[in-house]
Length: 155
Image (tube, rainbow, N blue to C red; front, side):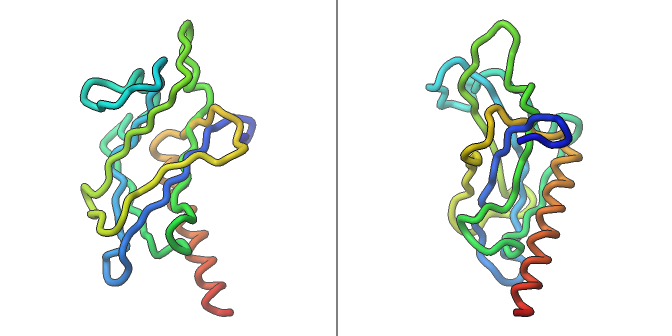
């Protein structure tokens, strides 16, 4: 995806939570993106390759997400944009991308699995902004969801 002349890779997160009271809240506490030459990395503790981006790069961050702001499961709740140029490491061939995430440290999960995807047709590689921009993106998505819900409820 091209945003103001910079290419990004787009990752979509679909969360699943119960509704009512504060049940719809969930925190995204860690996001780390790695590149590796092998598609067989399966153990986080032994390493997933070379880390190219993390949510906590500058300071400890988390994203407070609200399941009720989107129309339901399978629709996607958060978009993460990572700068495409991070996906190329000089002198190495790293065709495999690993995304590690952790949820529930601040607001616990209570229904189903969270799912990551990439948008089909998006030009790989995609990049993710610095943590502050990531938070602003999430807030913007929440506002769009709230406006759409209000429009739908008025109909």
